[in-house]
Length: 500
Image (tube, rainbow, N blue to C red; front, side, top):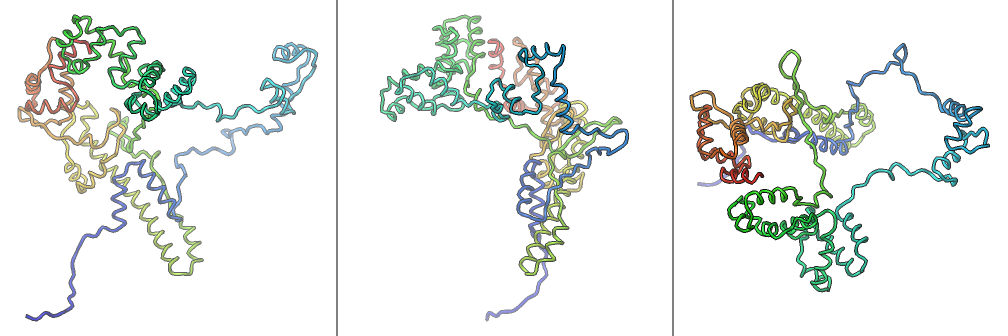
């Protein structure tokens, strides 16, 4: 069969991800803070976009009438008032002397002499300027600066000071020395004994427990400064894994102490700081900014709105486009302006569409989880993405993008939208299924109310939950307990016995 060439014309349909569609999808999954960064980049790249700084909710200031705001006095009037107040006559001479003036000066007027006021206010006659505002601001002291300041005051020998500076640079954020003393001695060309002698002096620095090489040494340094490091306590510090496992019998045998003394030593260890360096250089906690605000209405129901304080507002500068397009003659320039105008219009449209989509999804979540907002986490119902998608006629992927990295501020606290989507646990009596988060909350509530004499095992928790109509397996209870970071019943009993 001979091969031949021919031309065919076929009509097909295919889904193409246009740049505009990709932009809309990208904007949908961004949080408000990430959206601000993205819009800032677009403002730098697109000359036809401009920031909308207008505040439609700002109150109007009346210009005239009985509610008009009185203007402040002019500078000349203020100087004149100061002139009249700075002259003392008759009995006011005593007040002037009490205020710092000298007897026999008569009437003194500093209002017109700024340099004289500077000299008098600064306490000297040279007329020097007062410190600027930036010189009075509080500066955060880092851990290294704090340690170097103590080193310069406590150690005078230049060799020991060099060793101390080198070890300060090896301290991590928690305050622990991260290098071996032999390696430090080999690097600096000194003996290990010299390094150990300097380390002992550094370990007396503030904060207590600094320059420790492990947790046991860190706790020992703090106890030694409190004069509480006796042989019995040292043996406990040497066997910290037994304390972590709450092995009471082994600890009593190792330390040679009874239960009362052991509980007292554990309480002293709990009062110590295992990471003393975190008092410095700690990164400030970044608060989560809610994307959605929710509040109750006086007549009942809930009001859902976007957090406009964090949403960027942009406009298309059509006036600038009309002005520039009249002066453009070349095709590349016209194509560039047309592409920038299209991009700007698409960004404004995408932002509007994003806001509407987020509001629709958030409103439906609140509607389906209304019992949670009214009665608490025990009433949280099972919910999946498909339930929301079918209710608002959207795809599950769209709902997933909307609920990612989005937070809502509610009367019960700040929650991520993903929090309201939980799996279901069947009911024992054929009633409605229970939410997994509600079951976790029930397990935690039961464990929080247990006593040292009646610690609930996983089997006992299963029985109690089934009594409340929750059909759950023991392995599921154990999984939820571990997810809540709750130890087993054996460890909880030892912990309650030790009082920790």
